[in-house]
Image (cartoon, rainbow, N blue to C red):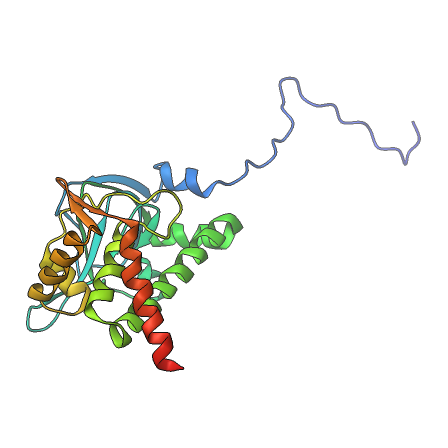
Length: 241
């Protein structure tokens, strides 16, 4: 053997070649409990997190519906959002909020994945697939907030109520629309669209008589309710021209 030649290193018996890194799956990550990730079941009306509590985690809703509310200094409650499966809630902690600015309550039986703030920030930095999924959620949420603002400023009470009912029944989302299983009170609907319970009652009765909605142990919303939204949009467009 020449002096410059390097001796061949033999692999030790029983040694295994290094394995390729397993492809990261955001869905598997959000369904598997591990360090920094806790799965929890919440009965109806249970508080998931409360306004003023430490903002130290993000919640992924695996199933069920969650109501997000804020309370004024006078003690009046306002519903700011109703979240469903495959949505995140509590992400304000990622932009430096030390305390929760709202309260999240289970409207139905829910299953959530609680992910520590540190763990969320780690996967956002290290896993492009998760970052893409999370950013898509944030953009969709911002678009919803903008639509809600336009709705409050320019649309009638009737159209606002129709839009909320369609959103609650998942119209416009992937998959088939579903009945609104959670018993959402007319007071809650009034808080969501900025009106009185009596006005909500008036339009709910009108929608039922027209066949846009049904009550069969739960509230069922039919696609025909879209006509209310589309008619309002047409009137708005004509008014702007």
